[in-house]
View (tube, rainbow, N blue to C red):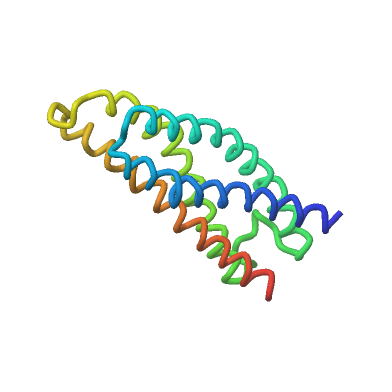
Length: 158
């Protein structure tokens, strides 16, 4: 059972972080390199929307298996005072990553399509902030996700 939990946890993390890496480091630069030709923007948007359910399933798996794996180590999610420092770091980063993912998917993501249709010269300050935030938020999330992976490796080695 323990091995199955680890495999599910690692596969969910690989799917999520791997997809983020592909979108951020491969597909997004390709779209920007084409000066946002509508077809490439549509491809990026389609890929991101197709990836979204993968992320949500991966998050659900991680949120189910994580507490079980902690329990196997004799730790409880509801007793953070007993956590080793690396567990605190990892779970803090995970919470931040989950928050940023929710912010991206539920707030900024839906706004970007609307703002993208407005010529840049006609965008309000708020619309410009939304558009720029939609570009750096996934990069920040990827950086945090990679930090979670590093923390996970450190935890596995302890």
